[in-house]
Length: 184
Length: 184
Image 1 (tube, rainbow over the protein chains, first blue to last red):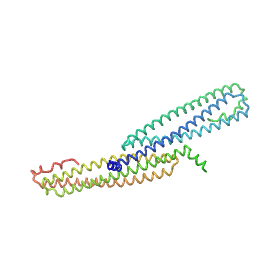
Image 2 (cartoon, each protein chain N blue to C red):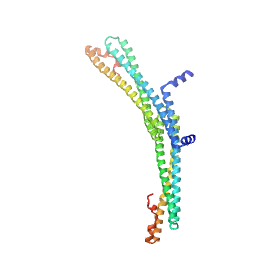
Image 3 (cartoon, rainbow over the protein chains, first blue to last red):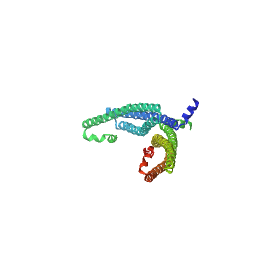
Image 4 (cartoon, one colour):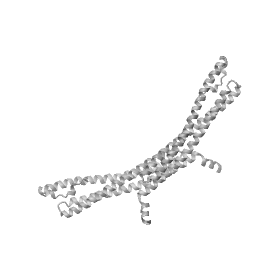
C-alpha cells in the first residue's frame, strides 16, 4: 500500500502526531538529565551534611580536652564545611527548579501526545515521570534523614555545652570559642 | 582548551542546558505543525462557510422562480454544505486543542530553557510563539468575518422569506420547502 501510506504521511493529523512524539522524546531526555543532576546534587548535599555532623560530633567529644589552637583549627574546618553544605543546598535548589520544570513539561507533553493520537509515546512518558518521581522521593527521604540527624547533633551540642559550662568556673566561660556562637 | 571544554561538556549544568534546547527545538516543531494544521483547517472552514453563504444567496435570489423539484435539489446541496461546514468546524476544534497544547508547552519550554541557561533557545522559541499567535489571530479574523457574513445572510433570508410569504396567498404557504425549517 505505498500510495495509502504516503497519503497518511502527509496528513496534518499524522504530522502533528509525529511532532508530538518529538516533544515527548526530548521532554523525556530533559527529565532524565534534570533527574540525574538533582540526584547528584542531593547526594552531594547529603554527604556534606553527614561530614558536618561527623565533624560536630568529633568536636563535642573533645570539648575540654583541646588547646585553644586546636579548637580554632577544628572550628575552621567546621565553618568551611558549613559553607560547603550551603553551596550544595543552593545547587539542589537550582536543579530542583529545573527538575520541576521538566516534570511540568512532561505532564503537558504526555497530555498533548495523547490528544494528538500518540498514545504509546504518552504512556511511555508517564512511566518515565513515575520513575523519576519515585527516585526523587527516595533521595528526599535521605536528605530529610540527614537534616534530622544534624538537628539532633545540634540538640546534643546545646546540652553538652550546658553541661560543660556548669562544670567550669564562671570566670573560665570567656574562653568558649567565639565561633561557637555563630549561627548554623 | 580541549580539557576545559570536555569538563564543561560533562557538567550537569551543561547537560541540562543541552537537553532543554532539545525540548525547545521539538516544541517549536510541534508548534509549527499544529499551526499549519490549524491554519489549513480554519482556511477550509472559512471556505466552506463562504460556499454556504453563496448557495444561500443564490437560493434567496431565486425564491418564487423555481419548481418544487428545483427547490429540492438546491436544498440537497445546501444541506450537504451545512454538513461540510460542521465537519470543518470539528476539525478546527480538534486542531485548536493541539495548538493550545503546543502554545502551553512552548511557554513552559521557553521558561525552562531560560532557567537552564539557554537564553538564545528561549528567545528563539518566544519569537516563534509570537509569530504563530499573530498568524492565528489573522486566521481567526477571517473566520469571524465569514461567520458574521453567514449571520447576515440568515437575517436577509428571514426578511426575504417574510416578504415572499406576505406576497403569497395564505393557502400557498404550505408549499414552503420543509428543509427550510431546519436549524442551521
